[in-house]
Amino acid sequence: MYGKLYSACLYGIDGVMIQVEVDLANGLPQTSIIGLPDSSIRESVERVRAAIKNCGYTYPLQRVTVNLAPADLRKEGAAFDLAIALGILTTSGQLILPDTKRLLIIGELSLDGSLRPVTGVLSMVERAKRDGFQGVLLPLENAPEAALIGGIEIYSIRHLNDLRDSAAGVEGNSEAVVGLGATAAPVHVELERLTDGIIPAGKGGRSVNRLNEDQLEDYRDVIGQQHIKRALTIAAAGMHNIMLIGPPGTGKTMLIKRLPSILPELTEQESLETTKIFSAAGKLKQADGLLRRRPFRSPHHTISQGGLIGGGTIPKPGEVSLAHRGILFLDELPEFSRSVLEVLRQPMEDHEVTISRARAVFTYPARFMLACSMNPCPCGYYGSDHPLQRCTCSLQRISAYRSKISGPLLDRIDIQVEVPRPKEIPGASEPLSSGDMRSEVEAARDIQLKRYRNTSFRWNSELYGSALRRFAPLNPEAAKLLHATLDALGLSMRAYDRILKLSRTIADLEGGGDISTSHIAEAIQYRQLDIKTIVSDEAGSM
Image (cartoon, rainbow, N blue to C red; front, side, top):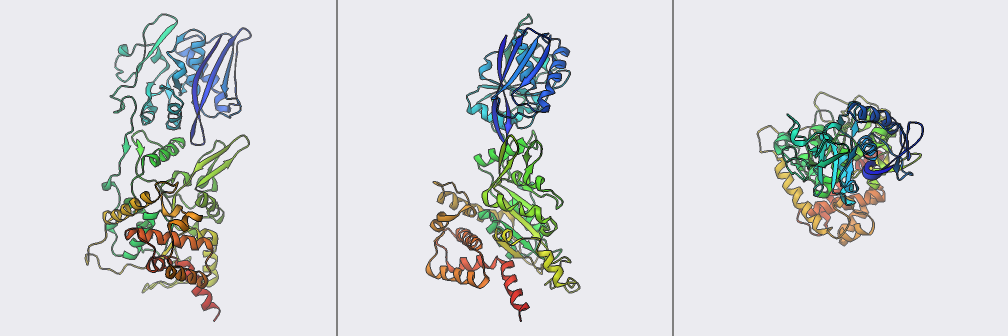
């Protein structure tokens, strides 16, 4: 006897449809799972056997062969348990499911037959919809996540025995969504879609996690620092990488942690991309819905390369991917190991991370804004005008401290700005608020969306090559100033391009006109480390 159902697994952050084929043949009673399963799938034999018996069904005393196709793709995780169990029950004639060719089945089984949630449901259901499936059967805990994908029926159960009980006859369980039309063998299962009481959208619709301004910290809390707020506005308007440099207590961390309050909400496509990553990583909460607020990730400086980039025996997205379309904040940048910082260079340039394993290669998106902070020296007071604190570091210690950050990495940070001690008296003037800054950012964002509507670009920071020359042309005066600065500071061509992109964003904040010398001059002043380095070199040679 032969039967076939459909399940799914994750490949990176994308869902892949898997055919679960079951064959029952005469022979010694044994069960084999083939098709490149990992150890967790091989263990599903015992979970499925116990669940079937404990739910009152009969496990076939035959040779059971389960094939997961395509056979050349390695499968991982416990999402196949329910499909394997139902495949055995339908093939042995104990259950009859309706229209299994259009039904995706995913879920992990407990030994007593109850269902446990699995990760990556959003990606699997999205793929099922694209492949023409009309419904998905899964654990009740995964139903809210699956319902974010509209246009596909959601059927959910808490227990394998829910397939035996009539939905109307389950006492005290108004959320049961799968029932039987009859109790005679073979059992004909009638599926009923998820009730409106569980997911507001019924058939599946996109609830969203809207930006709640009351939950975000506001730049109104920051006294003074108008120059830094301007730099942060420019960074947010073009999604430019930014570094704040200054002594302790100047508010570097406070300023960067308020960046999410001035960023525009995720678009529909960006929201789906980001939510899929969190789903694949198992970090999506049921109440979140589709994420609308841009991610803000702030890993500790002890993080490993794998934690930052992603990886593991079963590869999972790292912090750079969890920060996709949002902010990756590295506080006290020199405290991170140099090897960890160096692995940032490739994703900052290519906007994706590729992880190679023996049997597969996984690619995760990583298009993020890098925001970081650092002290000017180990003690933190080099060049400070603090009346009581003086720097106690030698030039060798300062050099060793700053050498943890390589030149190529610094080149990739568009804005490098010093944060002075605040000197404005509280209450002297009305501080610039996040609402004011966000209005400027959204206006510049609208200009960029209109400019790049027929291209693959969305932000000025993404421009490169001929597109950069096309969308950020310079008049002769501006070009002369930029080339003179390039020669004076000894900047690389990458830094040259970064200044050009930054100038484009500054011009967009003023209405989107042509780039002028004032825009170039302002962009140059945000390369503080380049300027300090050349000044220090000249002072040392005297």
